[in-house]
Length: 93
Image (cartoon, rainbow, N blue to C red):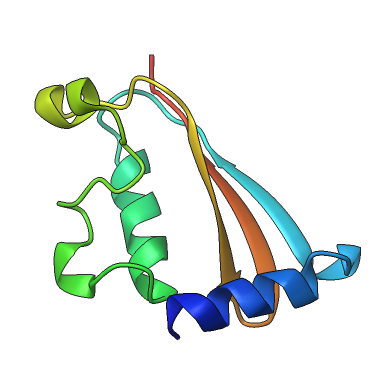
């Protein structure tokens, strides 16, 4: 699904409260929270599956990328099976 189609689908689902799921990924440091987030992004077509787990797409700060840890929470909205998933990736410490 292309990014434009994702945006159109998100806009169509945003007012359907029964089709929205809010998910926070919470676990201890180095337990795969950001890797799981990358895999979900790949599954919905927002990043390449070959980059999932390595891209760390929700670690947007240079320091997070350099150190390989999540320092600030990040969120993204995804469309999966006609559900709008609001995903939050959190730091583990």
